Length: 64
Image 1: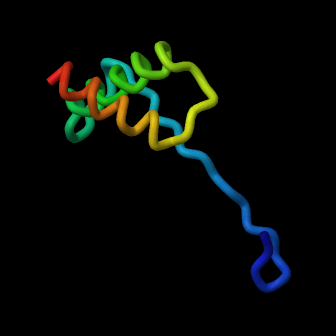
Image 2: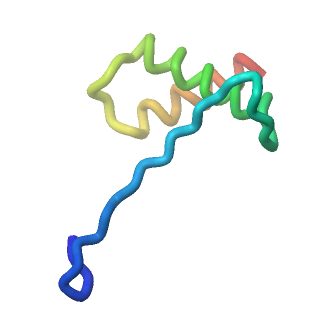
């Protein structure tokens, strides 16, 4: 993709979680990530985003 003849670079943001980092809503973030991995482990890849979204909502309700 270009804008004004310049190539726009896309950057990815990675969140590394360890015991040394302190950030807002740490417990909530950890719960969401754990639920995501649990859903992905069960479903694997290849489904539409809406399937993962529904499964994640169900898993988050189960986990609290």
